[in-house]
Image (tube, rainbow, N blue to C red):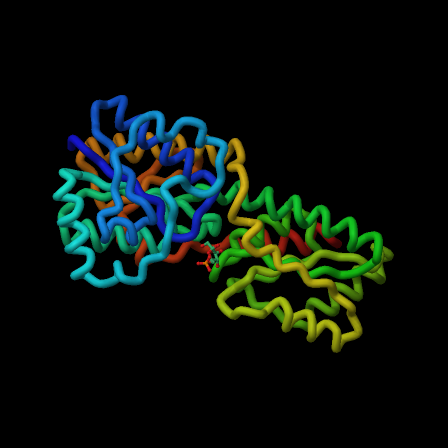
Length: 322
Ligand code: F6P
């Protein structure tokens, strides 16, 4: 391998920049040429590629977002388009690719390397932390802290006005963000797609919360889930049970911002390891972390397997309120 390329793909996540920096500098230190692909697969298929020098990644370790820009690219689901993309990489004499992104991006990476034979390594770059084969994804720690900061502020108002607040966090179809933010913020309840929930249970726990003289305030963390508008619907239902809940949808504030120290270290380690694996001849794998050890998982598993949520976390939040 003489030249590699790197791209960021899908929803941006804090820590993508430290990963790009680590990949660029590790590869340059080992005598490789490095290319950056702008806007993920969308940039690849139109040949939006430039050579990365060490100075391109100077002073980016602390910056949120991604200097390479990002995009979701439905066109890349077409094998003909993937084949054209391979030709573009060959034209630039690029013989290995590192994709930093979520499950959709890593699925694209799997099909791309299978069909074209171009070596590809994936890195888990998503705030959602829903990728099989890694305990932690780049950006997850930052989103936890960002959401937590917002919820701590909302709690001030909740306590002062003795009100219940429903706070919606991101996570697409999974409750990994919600369950951890819920524990860390001391939420009275956590609602996630993976665990069945009944409105009656929620009303009952709010009533017993009050009966125990804990005041009329509370935070309910809701994962956005696959059905848009859930949080507002829940608020309406609670209103019909005599509650006057406030609603706060945290939205895109969660995706931006400076990566935490944890995400910078994670991204740096995974980025450097991805280069090592590519140079050692590996392909079609994701480099992740399990039990604090760097690990590799076949991209095929990422395509086929769903990362389970630890339901104990959701129960724990309720237990800690008794
Ligand atoms: O995957 C990251 C994420 O922020 C999800 O939590 C969210 O559901 C989704 O992206 C939103 O995507 P988009 O910005 O493309 O609407």
